[in-house]
Amino acid sequence: MLKIHDRLRRKTVALTPEEWVRQNFVSHLIDNLGYPAGLMGNEVSLKLNDTSRRSDTVVFDRHGNPLVIIEYKAPTVAITQKVFDQAVRYNMVFHAPYIFVSNGINHFCCKIDFNNRSVAFLKEIPRYDRLMQ
Image (cartoon, rainbow, N blue to C red):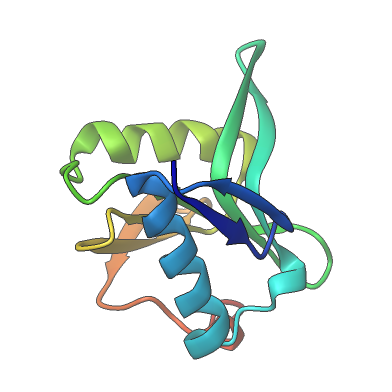
């Protein structure tokens, strides 16, 4: 089985189709959009309804608060409502103001307004420095 080095987890992991999407997406965020690698984590544990789960990637603000949760799927997996529902369930724990979903081909970015209970789809993934605006 092919393996790849995960720069956030600092270890070698199996190169599955979903992992390929994760590694490329994380690299894009860090290398092109200014996301600080030190404020990102892959496979971040969470407890949901007394069940242990893992969010694919979580991006934190400079105070350690969740800012973005990211859900990945393999390129052959369509981004459906079910995928968004999974990310939203995880975000019930994290309360991050952004959710990104990607299968490596299609990428979606949502901004959550908890006060007004609304969701807005953004046209593109914002640079890190624009997330706090």
